[in-house]
Amino acid sequence: MTPIFGLTPSELDEAAVAALLATPSPAGDGPCLIVTPNLDHIVQLRRNPAFRAAYRHAALILCDGFPVHYYARLRGHRAHRVTGSGLIARIMRNPAARPAARLMFVADQPATARAIEIWAAQSGIAGFADRVAAIVPPFGFIDRPEACADLAASITRHRPTLLIMAVGAPQSEIFTDRYRASLPDCWTLCVGQGVKMALGLVRRAPSAVQTLHAEWLWRLAQEPRRLAARYGLGAFRFAAAIAADLRGHPP
Image (cartoon, rainbow, N blue to C red; front, side, top):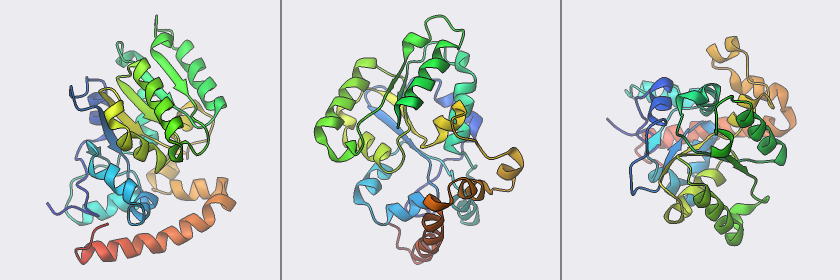
């Protein structure tokens, strides 16, 4: 099967990926990075060498964005659409499915970290809160080696079986790849705003909007100033990425 944008998407559906994350990651492999490409990721892959390197080393590639999923299907891949927000919501909705799991969240804000701690404390599972940790790295940490080293050390001390990077792309992926030698064996899931959605801090699109694959329009309505230019320019750049890919020139 010919890769798309230099990537080979997984054929696992959301339930299968969630089940995989409940099992131990391969011993000796360090962080097994799971990436969820959407339109913006594909655009960034063409412009950011460190982001491309992280994607090349990913253990699992899931089609998050509808345009990416649709293009993959058109090119003959039997990929399912598995969104980072849907996957983390499934995991956090049923923590009892991971009785021995140790979860580490790298969050974007103290309010997010606090909400994670409350979620863990209210799980009703004995000892679960002690196996959940949340940390907020300083703003711009990806460009500060000392901050990245401190973050890697904190993650290693907690010994997570599942590391959830919720600080957005591309820093989540780049950090995991750049410091993989300093990180423990674990599944590493990069989900952006997915944790906030699972916690109810950010409203997720209604099911009808999700069915129509119009989550981008829902997010645009919520944050028009931040996302209008990004989505508009991103659509043109994504079209250019498809054209290059069809000519045999992946990122």
